[in-house]
Amino acid sequence: MIRLGKALDAWGTPDFKEVLKREIEQLGASQLPLQQGLSTGSHAVDSKLGAMIISVSEDANVIHAKAGIFYTGIITGCSCADDPSPVDENAEYCEVQLDINKSTAETSVVLLKE
Image (cartoon, rainbow, N blue to C red; front, side):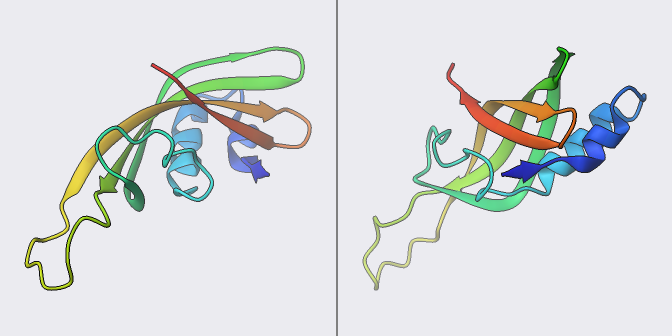
């Protein structure tokens, strides 16, 4: 389970969105549903991960944040060993819903379908 403790600590302050953005950017492809969000590539890459906080709301127990994730995808498995074609990186984007538990900072992340 993902824990976004710094974001939870910043909740209610003017810095919350920036802190949340930085924590999301440090998660990487293994903890975010980037592979499922690919639109042109076949493999999500951890490099060049960026986040944008779209909206934030709360209820009694949970902070709800919608975020846009900018990342890189590559097309793999389509070249022969002697093919001189370089691996092309493709810009990718997806949106996720993060639900941060206010007591534990445990966070669930769900890919939002367009």
